[in-house]
Image (cartoon, rainbow, N blue to C red; front, side):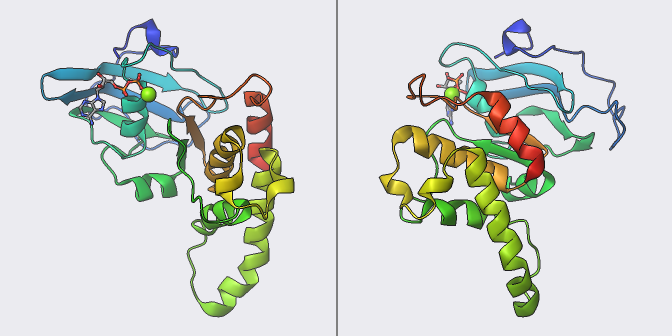
Length: 221
Ligand SMILES: Nc1ncnc2c1ncn2[C@@H]1O[C@H](COP(=O)(O)OP(=O)(O)O)[C@@H](O)[C@H]1O
Ligand SMILES: [Mg+2]
């Protein structure tokens, strides 16, 4: 993948080194990549990808198999460290942070191959994700927060149409429901930026929700 228009998002030139600072202003893009490059030995999977995603916008990354889409998401979310270049979230350089730190900073993702806890219930899957946002493990505080965590988990399930399957083992859900559960897990972490890697892979048109239903649900969580 290169910074050509095949990324689906408007490529911008990278700023001069040190030019960007942490920002919360309306003008600061939620995501900015600068010259993102990943090489696997002799293969360049990402070649100097610089793009911006403004807050509140939905963008698509398109390209044929092997174009580098998953590699791009892996760099954004700390699964891969880029060979060179930078990832900025709200202006903050998050390049190369481990996945748990990136998640805490507000980037959530789904994977191309479904990534859920099959032996936990649907509700437990999203509850664990919601719980990851509560930092206190003091017993009393934790007990008081539990109802709030459950509410957030149930709201996330509602957003992806799985409220009625809360007590079902995740392994027993259909493929499409499992894909939606993974998005529910991502939403339950209350992300600022949601990255979906081929979210409708293997799903029929009837199983495919509109992106608007996810984004409209997100602010309530
Ligand atoms: N861990 C890896 N090691 C070596 N090559 C990889 C690795 N991950 C991806 N690639 C290669 O990088 C290229 C881009 O892959 P990928 O990002 O999965 O593309 P896409 O998601 O657009 O189908 C492919 O040629 C793929 O074989
Ligand atoms: Mg892929």
